[in-house]
Length: 358
Image: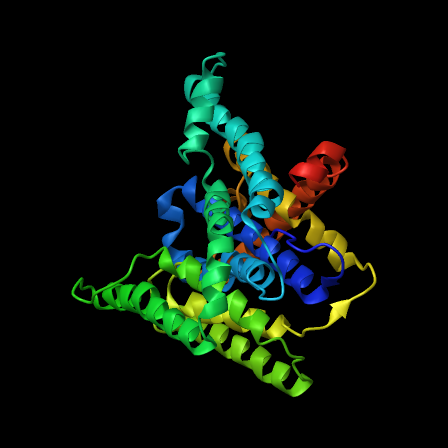
């Protein structure tokens, strides 16, 4: 989501940023709709909704992979003064400038009025992480930025196989073990904290940076095929086998899909000319910050969701309902994405925001 590098940019990173941003918007369009919808409407579409979620849960991991790829690159020197002044300040300002109004809006809606005392209360909520839910990622990335200079020093003395061993331990303890506990409905398998998987994604980005090579077309075909097979397998497990556990950022399917998607896009070629992907990639951070505004406006104020429209369509069969629901989710996603992109474009035209925040 963050650019990280000035000068020449790698085209595939912009492509991944844009795709991940679209996936985030779709995920929040879906989860937002289910949050405000009568639960009795949802069960017959549960497999479909879980399948869609499975296919977009890689979005945040991709952002972390990109950050690790850029910031942990051994050829790049990053000191604490640089990280704090240039990168941490940017994230901290974004948290304050967007988190405080979002927290204040919750107070206004709850009390149906605005009072001056709500401003310090909203500031307190933001500083303690109690603003709109999508802002959690900014707190996470701020923490990773703060430890990056120290982490780079450790990675300089740690052999690649040592990094791989650490990643394997985290994957087993923070991903595989919790997933097995969930599937088997037990708590006997020792686990590491779920949050360890975010560190894993960050390290995976580093791994791609130190293994920088051009990926030939033949290997890219195999990687793309692996992504397709993995995604298809998960969809079939939902629709045919009735697998009902919702994927999380730390579950093995999500980890593997995110890494494979990054690998499929990873090509090591420097893009020397401005192209639309670069323009769109530059907007991704702002789109991420503002898109929930439009989700909430549609669902909570206009009170229109994909499910309310589906009800009005009078669809008779579940199969037809699923097809219509997919279409509606797509339309809602495109509407929110268009509005958020337009807003992001306007915000980036404000020099101080463009320079210090967006």
